[in-house]
Image (cartoon, rainbow, N blue to C red):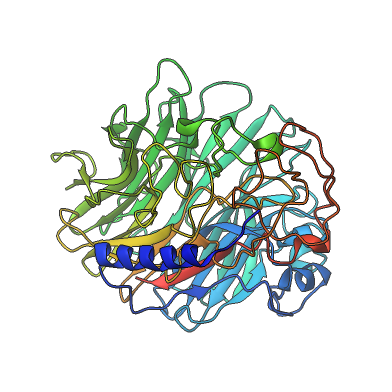
Length: 558
């Protein structure tokens, strides 16, 4: 359970002041809460109507994570965002693809869900290829074309058989205001051990060249029980009506994941991905490839970072740790996280960022720059040299001659240690809302960088709030979008989470770690850390909608 003391508040204020002193003044653009799930009628259907699910979503105060954001180059006052939105849990459902839109530059937001969710009886919902096929959706990714069409990619699956693992793209027109259709890009197989399509990314050619408006999608195809997977890319040249047969880009040498795509000024397509060293013959590497013919063929992959030390949850024990049956021997609490890469391209060249651990154990964001995406004449360099704090989950974009990177940063954590995940003290207790989002900016092609704090309040990503379970999940990425005239970042934020005590705890070694959240009235059966079984309320129980699960998506101009 968490008990707040005045010295903790003072420490947080001092830590936030220290962060600003280290990375520069806070940005003028204020943070805006994107997911407004604590106000009646805030979620509406694609056509402006409502139903029982969206009415419940409006006040559900459930988790949203893994955000995406896109600025409309046709009208930069229009910004759209997405997330893994768990609001359907309030009606006994699961996670779905949240869709949010602002028409005033990100000051205020309207909230919705991509049509086709379980129970969506609207005309568009019934017509969606997801209807009746899958009951959970996530991994959102978005991009506009130059005419105000928005394309929203997501996966859709079932947690039990048939698992499916399908990849879809939804299309919106009129600057993202009007839903048009959802199209299947790749379909999995029903078996739990069959084909599963995952880790998706989407980008649209926003140049004025001959391939302007082409949609590119990248994803990983998991072939059932086989150890290796492959990264594939497909394209649409008819505004998302159909997609081409995918082209295999990676070698399939190991577990290759998390494709990130970018289009350069000349229309060339770039992709980067990370290899997970889960097989004896592989190492943790960052790779890239290039296409100059609209995604029909790709160059031989180039490895730009070799055998790096990954900042993965597994470095500290299991991939994620919590309380009760999710407790780890270390006593630490943290969600899943991993070293990932992202790419952008502009007139100065191609720029790829990733995070990795230094020999000291600190996780830092690195950048490597190339004039053409094929040759990499300069070595990787750190974006900053801050002596304290982990930096992870970087994303990158470029516009108006400025490259912008965003990442989580814990340099304000007074309990920081390179040997622990952020937000934990040496005893495994909560060290406060000490995680911020930092933006880094380069105007010389990625050679030098200046930084600023993007968040107006800190977070701690370790809250034990993932449904009725006793561990955390905050998604696998954050996002930045840049077009001429506007740059916007979006992230998962826990400033609205209401803390509390866990009625399952009875004074055992998992009690009083400071990561418990408010779930008043939940009908749990108390138990100790050494008792792995316990009873929990159903996921739709109103006791879970009181703010303890209320992580949200926030955004800011950068």
